[in-house]
Amino acid sequence: MKIEGSVLPVRRANVDTDQIIPARYLTRIDSGGMGEHLFEGMPDGPQLLAQHPGASIVVAGENFGCGSSREHAAWALLGRGFKAVVAPSFARIFEENAYTNALVPVVVAPAIAEALLSARHVTIDVAAQTLRADDGEPIAFTLDPLRKQFVLGGGFLQFLNAKIPAIRAWEAAR
Image 1: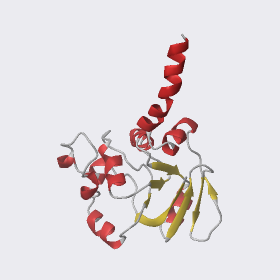
Image 2: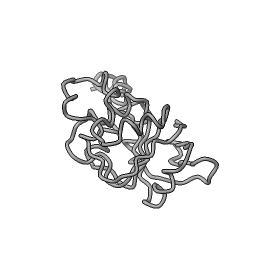
Image 3: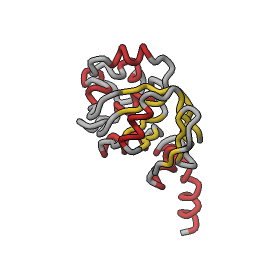
């Protein structure tokens, strides 16, 4: 699985989930419509999105997705067309929600994230666990092996659904 696209540079650390999707939009229990309100809680969020139409990879500072444990943050990013977030670190619950929903959380060194903020195009090879900015050299990153399977399979629920035949076969054999 490869993700290719332009970068949305979020030049700040500690972007919390209320900046990603404000609490006033948490009235839904499904992912529909979340992308419309992406980054409305960030002071320059709507302008940033307007300046980078069609971007599909967020590059940000440390501790992306901190704050409350809302899955809506991952839904909002996916709903706006983002497939990956690259940052030096993620809040633990945001990272879990990203994996669960097949949004790829790529952890890189702070200096690499800083350099990627000015990249125009990034290619992320999820299976090979590498990313390449513009025409640069590949940069290795690590994904949790099980959660990598979630991403490659389209998310946690799709991963589980693919296991149903094996579960039924095991049950029948019992």
